Image 1 (cartoon, one colour):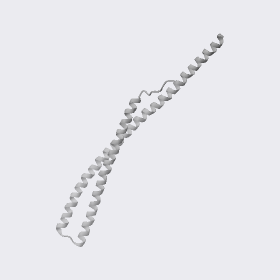
Image 2 (spheres, helix red, strand yellow):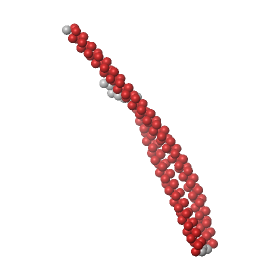
Image 3 (cartoon, one colour):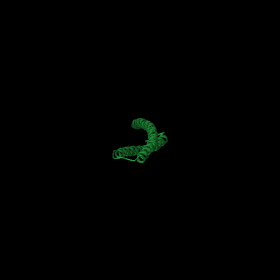
Image 4 (cartoon, helix red, strand yellow):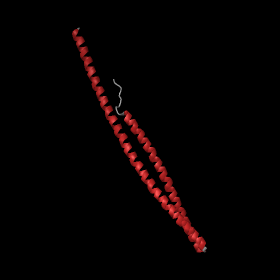
Length: 149
């Protein structure tokens, strides 16, 4: 019997490597997104805490300088929050892009694996057919040898 070799094996190996690289890039994009989203959450929480603290200070009485200081600080924080929100949107878009690429790579690899499965099934059928032909030839030769004697 012949040994099976898949004619697109090298292509499949390359596609699997591309899939692995894409998977790593996707995982990295998730990590970056989570870090930026966590930073945004922390900033929003700090802003909320600062507003609560400022309101408490207003209840007990604060100086105008203190009120102005907190207002400027909150304004500065809001600008930072807007910047981080933009980074979150960009990180999410990048993560979604990598996810789409990973889906495409998965489909490509699966296509080549399915082709290999079909090709291997065809190979097995061909081998069985060859084996049956050889057995027929052997039995014919054996029959003629018996007839000649």
